[in-house]
Image (cartoon, rainbow, N blue to C red; front, side):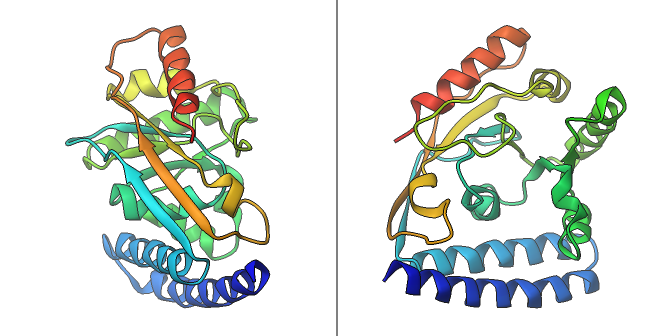
Length: 223
């Protein structure tokens, strides 16, 4: 049954994705963000009604701008982000912006590429883009482990996170999403995915402190 649901999910979701990708280049300004929101809403509908996955949220985004440090277990939380955070500025692997069609739309949306293997110049570009985006008043979202981590395992915080925290000068809100067991594989499973929001971490901490507190928080929030 899970296989049949998964195949139906892929068919409906990716057909809708192709339609929205074709529509996005016609949009201007915030129109691209609206298309991204529609894409995320389509995905959530498919997750709920086709995959039979319940979504539970414990806590919520805070009032005002913040940097949300989200534990990353599968692509679910990346696609679902606009449903939870509105129009977040998302830091993502540079390779994603190289994907045909999707990459151009992601860049117009305001996604900031992270090129971990390209040294100081790439880091300076990231910081410059983040500084410019802060003026929009949108929330920021980052996966501080840098890649998907299997549920129940821990990964270190990537280098550059503390510098971004210092540059943005925003509170960090740790978030855990237990999507891995249900969503990570090709065959999705019915069940429940839970978002858990931790207490905001204040600005002004040292690199060691902020990395330690974020690492501890996102792993403690796992369900």
